[in-house]
Length: 98
Image (cartoon, rainbow, N blue to C red):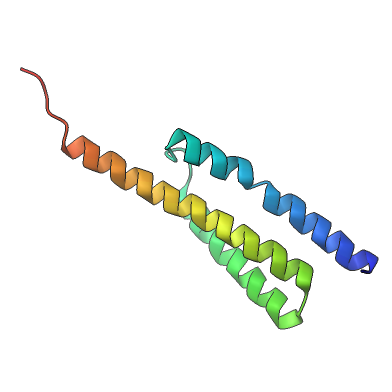
């Protein structure tokens, strides 16, 4: 492996792994209230475009990093909407006291 690809894989690895703490925190806390769905939707669209760019170039570091990052970003978005919907459902079933 040449130095340029090693550099790309290392950079992609660091930026991709940086999403794991957020995914784990969101999963464990069962809350994503502080996460901006608009930001993650735009970010995911950008990562998808980077992935397509990497595929067009045949650049493995770009493809690998962005494919994994896209999955992690989409997991965060799915959890955000899941917990949001669950919160609204439990608010609707709340019974007030006398």
